[in-house]
Length: 363
Image (tube, rainbow, N blue to C red; front, side, top):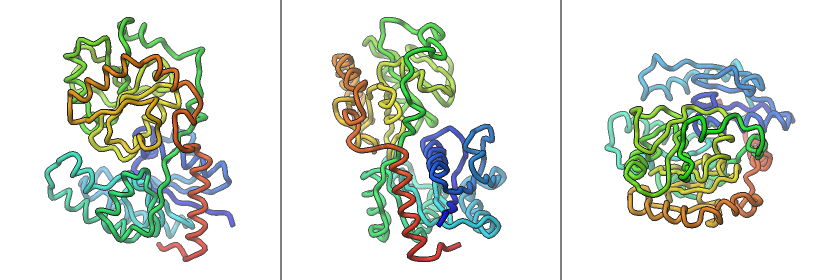
């Protein structure tokens, strides 16, 4: 039986972690002969993945933000009659979904970020609960997320599976020659400092405030590089903005460490991608990806404590050569389990086939 799999996502773009995960799924499914139909709010049709299946764009910008998921889901439900699929995988908060990919829960996000509950948050919580109630299977991207789902949605306990998200290792093959550019030369970076790379699409959630306070004040021989969303202002002491970088692999190669400071991050693919490029980590202990990373290639800190961050940075300076040596070794030295895309996609396909055998997919 040849499967046709539908995928819902907020954006078919190379941006945040869930968006990159969606692109990896499309690649993995197509390589295994699976047909894909992508339902999305917006798309970059320059991406090769946009040509690998049918892409249905459902514009939602004219809808109030907190109602967009509901509107999107209503349109997907109707469009599914026109573009039938055997199984629908939700890579965003949407209905109808047969398999919901859980990158975190909204109640968990509110708790960890200490955000005051708003009317919009109540709407989101109610819709998310409905998604979890109606989906037939839940894929948790970390043990942290799995426990969180069971805490807030205990009725999901028997339909959850833990599958760590993969990294496309083909993309992150080491290139030691012909780098796109020398970042120290291009950006005028000091040669006597260790470079810490901060990749972020949402600076507040990713912990930029803590990093800014530390790197602007520190007398340690370190500098912070930022890739992704523009910074709130242009001139920072000891902080350099590199813009949106399509060739992040080249940037990883030229940095001494990646630094991740999120107060809430259910997984954190940036950590895995960094290590795939042999760049060790200074990382918040609130990231789910730390579950699959050996301690030799990372040093953890409490993202709510400047002293903890300072201690982690000092440790990384003292052990930089050893950590970089470990990070340049085999995958089994860095990761506790397989994060190969092929393995992940095979596990998902098995779940899809079981659902198809057990019951007709609902629409």
